[in-house]
Image (cartoon, rainbow over all chains, first blue to last red; front, side, top):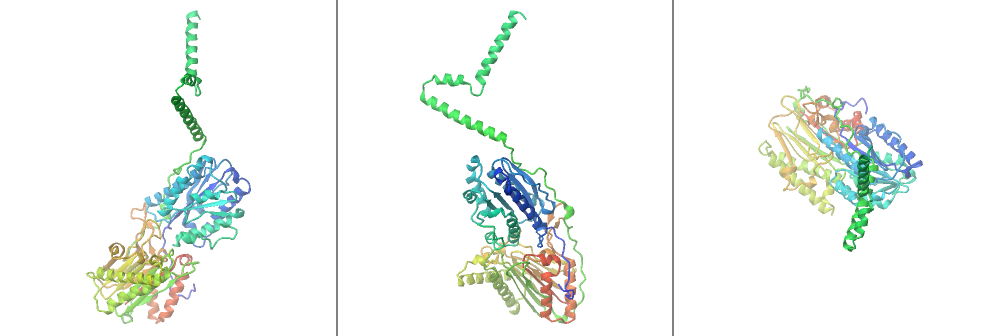
Length: 227
Length: 365
């Protein structure tokens, strides 16, 4: 703005409203090699994108990281990108996908409870699950129950759930657990960095009021990220 | 050891062997003894129990091998209150005098949010004699025709309230609520007619609506949805005159398209004061983080709350700058252009704000 403008006033200080994002990541053995390497790079690119976001996303998004293989582990509790230090993920073991997603749901519910208990207003949280495979056989029996839980959570606007598959992912499983408002997507060629760049802008769009279904249509994302 | 001792030891050894034989996991003793029973029902039941037992053993084994997920955070999160601004102090401001013959000076603009494709806010302002009317409508980002809804509602609300002023209705604390309800319901009905005429869904016209009206001895506000509005009170303190309708989550509110006579009591909120104010303002939620205390420590300093207080620093500066510009006889078109530039990029936060920004302010002598 020109200095000749007679209207000038600095902004008041307010505590930024938060949006919790739970990244639920498949670190099973099949991700070993290029898969886990690209995922690690993509996550770091995501954090960098948020830290450097010109629309102040860095003060709004609180990101938590959960991994699932033969076990489910909270690698990082939700926090602002500037305070996150996620160690490089390693791939091993089987795919306890259902347990992993449930842990993501637990994480965002606990965070919302905390926001409420401290008087904070918040944006609808996100759960992003990324996998390259199918759940363990004993987990498949619980897929329908998980799908129902996700459906109810989406209908009540409790959270947004997005399932992302990479090469090798069982698409029918992702379709089963996804809500029609946010259908599952496939990332071709392990272009995690492009996906995470798109994800940060999509979360910002929803935070400023755009409908979730419109926001996830993907006008802003890279051509290598395909449905 | 004598023979007696050896006998005792032998008896214990035999007993131990028998107990081990009976209690070991896959003891064939029971199977054998059962197998000698030829009842087919009993044999089938035995088989069923064996299958169940195997399944339970597998489940127990799997569970033992798996590291359980930590469903609770390892440490309870703590709110770092040192990062939260203090609860605002409400203190008198000094607004420079203005020639009362100039009537109401005002600034008005609606500008697009950062990187937004389309402006979905709309506004109206009507200053005449001792009265001023401010109208702000914020089209819902999630609704397809919210810009058309905001344009329609801003024009219709301005018309409804202007009619009352020009028709000689003396607005007061006694009739403000009834007049406001009637006006808002008329506008909601006209929005429904618009949707029907266009054969489109009424919900797709979702927008909020705020009206602030000041006369010689009265200031009132009526609104549906969120945004902010305020005024300068009789002690020269900036005060809010509405409580935005907000759900549990940010961006959750109610819209003019939802309004009908059945929910009017719940959706239309009215407030008024019977005295002369020098300044009023109304804004959409886009610029509220820049000029309104809306997320600070509570009075105990331990939690966060929305104190809903206009920033005295912000509005005192702007009001004085407006008085100076009006005294210098800057034309209204130029004022509005300068104000639009300010809302677009007047400070870092305004320039980065992704939501549309509408802010109207009026000051008189």
